[in-house]
Amino acid sequence: MNKTQDQLNIGQIRKAIPEQLFKKSESRFLVSVAQAVSSTVILGYIGYRCIPLTWFALPIWILFDLLLGTVAMGIWVLGHECGHAAFSNNKLCNDILGYILHEILLVPYFSWQHSHALHHAKTNHLTEGETFCPVVLNSKMGKIYQKIKDIIGIESFSIVQIFNITVLGWPLYLLLGVTAGSSRGFTSHFIVPNKLFPSRMLLKVSLSNIGLCLVIFGLYKWAEARSFAEVMAIYIGPYLVVNMWLTIITFLQHTDINIPHYDSSSWNRLKGALSTIDRNYPAWIDSLHFEIGTTHVLHHVFSELPHYHANEANLYFKKAIGELYHCDEKPLLTSLYQCASLVGVEHKGDGVWFFQKD
Image (cartoon, rainbow, N blue to C red; front, side, top):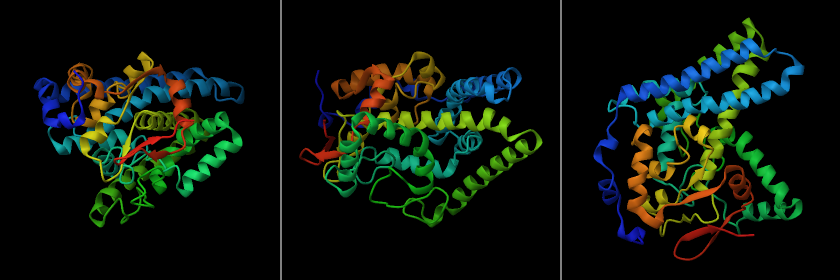
């Protein structure tokens, strides 16, 4: 049966999913933590013992760090779940574990938790969303992007955008609020107050910053005791790959030629949550990342649902929402290239905005 968003509400969708799939098991979650952390540590130790720190071994280290960062992304995903209270019914337990898992990856846990909650609260809102909000095609910035694309061509434009997303995207978002909604302008995850972080967030932002400083100091002492090359090979390289996966996953979940964005005249929470898209990740990567890329539409509707129930819950969820479910079966790199070629959105009427087709 075809369904429209006007015929559904979140309560109806939740009733279609067995209640036991929303129940949290701290011990089961900690098994995933042990898996992600031990896999990362063991693989890192293998690299440390087996690959020489020489310029001749640089190509090997690049390939190794791509693998190690891909594995370590699982730690990021589990910290993200703690931020959504999917680990425990106890808020303090969620925050302690999430703080440890994220700060060790140089993620300002409490600051990100706050901005990410806004990302979920305003998903695919054209101006009030948080992260990868598209530019309007006929805006000043949209015209600049289109001009650049016309000059350098679609292939070069896509490559430049992929570099911007995967290398510059995460630090620029944390530092300056790049890709966040235009309604807030400049924001920073490290400074209070701003339009994203009011004064009441001072303590939590400070705690996040302190955690980052402790990790950076630890890296400094490691480099001092051993070598900067070792820190670069075993931590910084994989860290950059984690950031790459984070931005690829987020970008592809919210950017597509067939996915709408909404302005204030038509947006609502369910519309925004259902305007996300699951992608076709290689099975081994999907497993390492606890299926975050293939159950993400579900996650945006029920972010508190634990990852170890997501695959089963997704079966009920897809049946409940019918044709409102978005999934892209193209190879991941093809999807990334095509979405990176998109410039901006244009109004299609009734407060609905879509990316312009070439």
